[in-house]
Image (cartoon, rainbow, N blue to C red; front, top):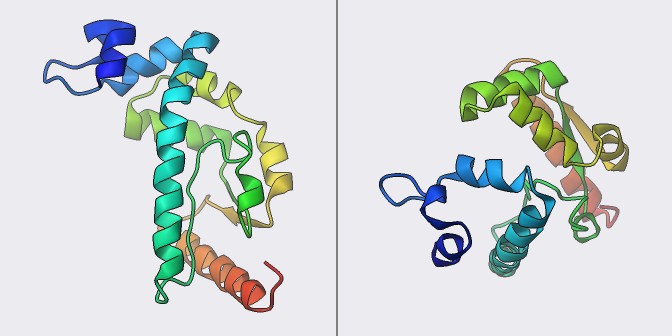
Length: 160
């Protein structure tokens, strides 16, 4: 919080002193230099947390898999650290509707963030498995179970 306040002042905090993620997003997604600066602050912290959790998981015999739900996985060069990549496919209109409803984004905000990512066809092509997130939650859960089973089977065969 201290660094964010030094960089951008009170305008990136709400009335209760909490970080206003929307205010930060408006700032960094309209200025590439500010985005890189924020990533330079956040990415090392996230990387250390991820590494620590991975070490803890590796030391726990009851953990059979560790799933990274990571934005910008390919863009950040993290794919090489993964045994398998799963691409969750959903039509653009549905993705937009969901984030507008759940996060309060505008269509312009959604489009701006989509542009900052690798094109989805490239992400899809890099994936080992594809889940189609176009139906109900039960169908998606069923696909997740099937993919996880296939990954675990490949891992036990030394193929993952």
